[in-house]
Structure formats: C-alpha cells, structure tokens
Amino acid sequence: MTDYTFASALLSTKSASLLNKAQFRELRNADDDGFILKLQSFGYGVGEQPKAVEAIVGAEVLKLKRELSEIMPNDDLAPYFFTKYDLTNIRAYYKKKLFQAELGPFEPTGFLTEKELSQAILKNDYYNLQEPYKHLISEANNQTFSDSHSLVTFLEKTFQKLLYEQIKSRQDASLEKYFVISTDINNLITLLRSRKLRSDAEQVKNNLLDCGSISIADIVHLVEASDREIASFYATAYLTRFSEPLDLFFEDGNFSSLEHALLRFLVDELTRDAVDIKSSANIIIYVIRKQIELIDIRRIHLDRASAAMVDET
Image 1 (spheres, rainbow, N blue to C red):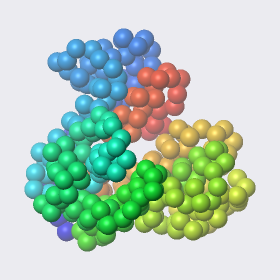
Image 2: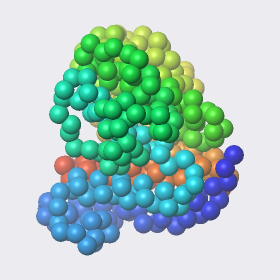
Image 3: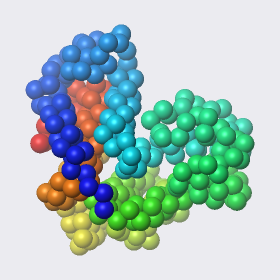
Image 4: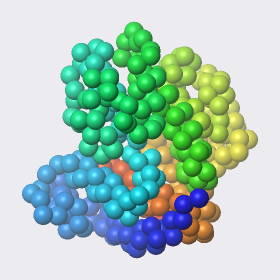
C-alpha cells in the first residue's frame, strides 16, 4: 500500500484555509455583488475580475485538482475524485457520435483532454488511453444504443463497475470505503427523489449504481414501501446511521439536510482510518470537506437562509 504520510501532512495544513463559520456568516450577510467580493477577499478568484459564483467555484475545483496532482505527482489516487467530470465529457462525445448532438461546454476538471476524447471516441483510436477509460470505450463500441438514455445508463453502470474493480486492485481500504459509502448515499438519494417523482421500479433500477453495500435489488423493493419501512430497512442495515437522518427527512423533506448528514457520516467513517497517517484517509477527508465547502457556497448564494454543513461542525 502507498505511504501517504507526506501528502497527508501537507493537506492537513491546507485544511486551515477552508472557510469557517465566521466567513460563511459574512457571505450570508452580503448582497450578490458583495458575495463575490467577499469570496475574493477569502482567496477565491484572486487576481481576476468579479464574475459569476459558479465560475469561481469551478475554478476552485480545478485548483483542487492541480493541488492534488502537485502533492502526489506520481500517484493515481487524485483522478478517482474527478471521474464524474470525465464521464460527463464521455457521454457528450458519444451523444455527438451516435445521435449527432451538439457538444456542450467541455468539463476541464476531468483528466482526459478534448483531444484525447475526440481521438478515442470520434476516431475510434483509444488504445493509448489509461484504464478504466480504455476498457469503457472498448465496451461501449461493442454495443448498440436505441437512444441517448440507454447510452447514458450503459456508460454510468459500466464505468461504476470498472472503477470499483480498479479500486479493489489497489488494496486501499480507505478509498474502497469512500467509494462504497458514496455509492450508498447516491443510491439512497436517487431512491427518495424517484419516489417524489413517482418513478416506477424499472426507472429507479436504471438510475441506481452497483458496488454499494446494499444491492440494487433490495433498494428497488423499497420503491413502493412506506416511509417507516424505508427507515426501518436502513436501521437494520449495517449503515445504521442512515436511519436518523431519514427520520428527519420524512418529517421535513429537506434533501440538503439529508445530504449533509450522510456526508458527515462518511467523514466520520474515514476519520477512523485517518489515525494511520500513512493511509489515504486524510487526503480523502480533505477532498470531501472541500467539496462540501463548494456545495455550501453555491447553496448560500442561491438562498442566504439555506443550511450549510459548516454550521453543524
């Protein structure tokens, strides 16, 4: 297993630069123009003209990617935190190739470049790509898709399994824990949103991801279940700490509060591993906290009264 002592020590010092309660209080009290100026005073978008909050947040994600790459230049841990951006770009290029869709804005936070994706997907030259992208494109090229929905479902589910196989081969317990619990969180929120939309079981099944601790089949059985039955199911599953946030969610229907509670659980679980400074746990925790910070910035900009996770730490 890789020794992450050096990277963990560096990121522990960077944790002090995450926005604190007092700084979020200043953001809450600022108008829209003042909000951007406050962010800049906190070190976001420094040296640039005031612009949209979303652009500033996007620049912070790119900054996080650069930081991790600089701290771990010869390690492949960092890309696991940005795979969703690569998948977004891969979906876009396949939609262009198969359904003549227009390419939307390219997500620069992924690890595959526009040139690499164009060469791999539009020109079928993917042999020099790293895994699991090479395997994903090879699998996709052997399929026939009737519409963009079936394409997206295939790419997401196949990529999920390939990522998990690669993570297991690393023998990194903290990274595997992060991946599995993140999948459980994603699937639970997908289930609850689908019930709000009154989606049928087949639709829910297509939107759920494999490789969590709870099987897709078990989750699909909850589509028609009552709130009490869902809470009871999670209370008896090994992730018992999902049950209390669920009880609160069924009272107020607040997805933001539920997501915050589940992310706190994920951080708490990884904190147990972080005692070993050689593990990747401290790095993963820093990435999660940075992602939470950016989520909170977006939410508070849209609604100054919205709950922020920083308020609960």
